[in-house]
Length: 224
Image 1 (cartoon, rainbow, N blue to C red):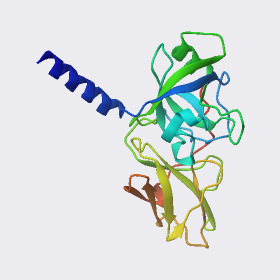
Image 2 (image 1 turned 90 degrees about the vertical axis):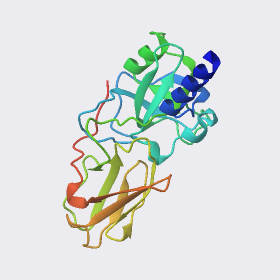
Image 3 (image 1 turned 30 degrees about the vertical axis):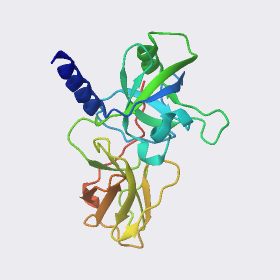
Image 4 (image 1 turned 90 degrees about the horizontal axis):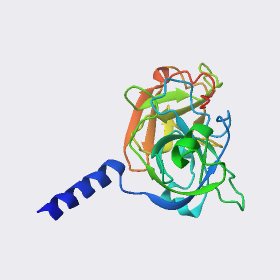
């Protein structure tokens, strides 16, 4: 009976953490603070304040960087404190040096127990936690992009509870991505505040908003 309850506890723990940890991922120190490039996550009140840049290491498996992972919360375990961190940038894309997770100083110190900058082995998993305070999902304009241009709009979805966005349609126009997680739309004069935007996730589910409900992304959030 004791073994049975132990097994139930293990299964429950897996459900909570999604039980998809990628192991032997290279963890490295990035910088004291994040930058304004990469994912360009919106300015806001963040519930998760640790941050990482994500690379293309094969060890990351299905968490290898792709645009929909921008703004997601990953759990990083490098042998010391287990840290929840927001994906806020990219690391050495299209490089022979396949980066795993690159951590800002605060995150590195927690995850490694204040080791000197170097390389550590980590396990990484996707969580269902939302990076920003409040309920989700939330639609945001990309930082420093126009909010009232009927001919061009750039928006993304955050606080998705771990769902990874892959497509978006605004006023019947399919969006396209460039270097981050936002979708760009050439609106042809159709993108007014009442236009509907639908984000589709990799699991097949969707979230819908009126464009006028999408928030101002302000400036890129800097984590430190």
